[in-house]
Length: 252
Image 1 (cartoon, rainbow, N blue to C red):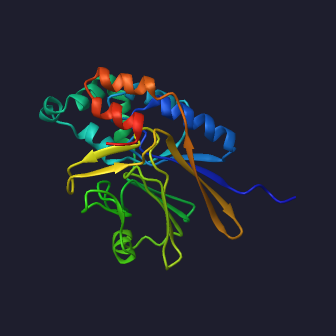
Image 2 (cartoon, one colour):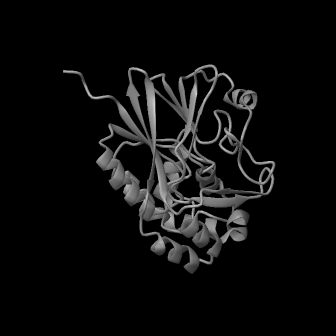
């Protein structure tokens, strides 16, 4: 009898939204995957950082890499905390153990020499791999630009996060790049590298499942409904009406 194909769930950009995480984990359980990988930006947000950490720790030894805002937490200075009340709230809510855990996370990882995991690009947790935002919104980069950012990584599959936009791109060289989207924050705006907005136009929590077949890797994107009202209330109570709107609508 043939063995069942390998199935891996990928989550990214949870951003302290423990309610979205719970819904995604329940859906993943129904998918009967073999393992779950976490692509970073885990605990930053005006929501429930410590509860999110505790829920992830309950899963056991989960392959996890860090994102740019995970690094922002443990690199924060007193000035950073004074100028960013959300960052200060996150650090106070977490306590020491979660912050020390973030310090241990690698920037990238490799699974069985076949899948390369990064948050942004192989070389940077702050650069978008697939999207150019010079126009103010996400547009797919030309393939030569993607290959330049991939650099020397030649694994058949690259999985990234950071943009919060679910996407699958196949390159002419046979490589496949997958972004599973965001578990906890379906839209946001940023000033770097230019002012831009990332929007999915839906409050659904997002993740992806890769299934290994004889023909290659199947990719399925999953958009999970959950009771986001409690998350929006939490964000609003901490003075982040922008996060509340983004969580509720997937729009900036």
